[in-house]
Length: 111
Length: 114
Image 1 (cartoon, rainbow over the protein chains, first blue to last red):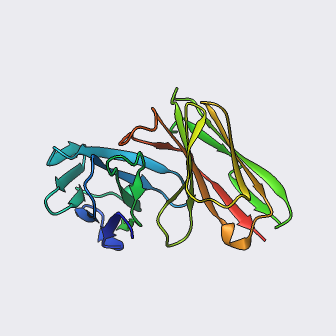
Image 2 (cartoon, rainbow over the protein chains, first blue to last red):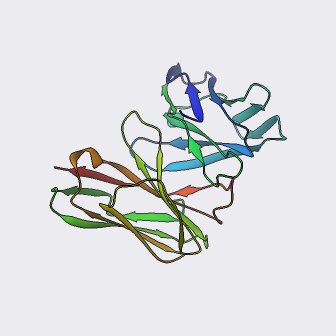
């Protein structure tokens, strides 16, 4: 079974609106990361939040982590057409040395 | 540019061909990874190399053969592939393979097996 599952699978919004994507996972983690992937390209690391952190900001990105609920959210504020991409969460379960990726949320931002 | 390059970007091959994918990282990292990304499936980790040593083989069929001659270069040798192997193959690198490192991805090789 997947470690990380994103919700929703697809999201379509207008430029200027905020976009929220959620990630749920099953096991304990050391940290959780969010990545972006433009169509047919490689993944780009966006932000890493450690298990002892609750919230982190990077520019227009805000990530929260609730380890009691085993969930994380990624908020993109004031979205732009260039934010159109797929967004993946990746978890780092202890003692695995692996990143486990979810299936991703496909975000479309309409100009 | 993430500092990780992959060649070729696109590859079409028959089931009897032999080809190789190349990955190079210019970040001074010591760990390199191969992932397979198929439509509607999560990213699948295939192989991990840490300081040139293979530390993970995620039950990958032997028709995929990795090679890591040094910490900056990673190859994936392909032979007698199947159509279901058609996918985007992504290379990544990180400082080392300790848990929780951020990974830097190349643009991928889009492979089509006929």
